[in-house]
Image 1 (cartoon, rainbow, N blue to C red):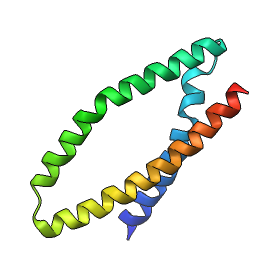
Image 2: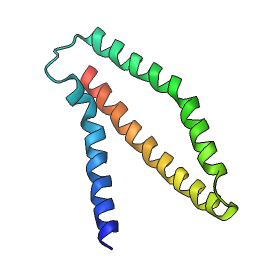
Image 3: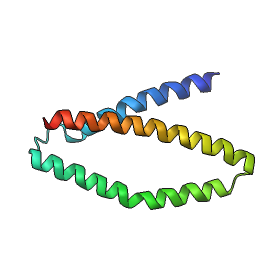
Image 4: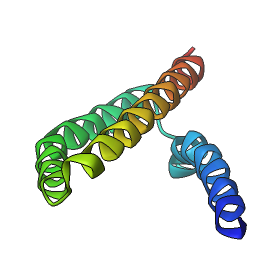
Length: 100
C-alpha cells in the first residue's frame, strides 16, 4: 500500500514537472520568438529521431514476456500513451499561449 501511494505521488509530481519543463528550460534566457521556435523544432527533430530506438527497445522488452504478461504490458503501454497524448496536448496549448 505504501508503494502504491508513493508511486501515485511521484506520478502526480512528475506530470506537473513535465508541463513546467519548457518554461524552466528557457527561463532567464530571454529568447526571441524565432529562437523559441528554433528551440522547439530542434527538440521535436531529436525526439522524432529517437522514436525508432524507443520502439525497438519496447519490442525487445515485450519479447521477453509470456503471452499473459504481454497482454498486461500492452494495456499498460496503451494507458501510458493515452496519458502522454493528453500531456502533449496540454503542453502544445501552453506553447501556443506563450507565442501569442
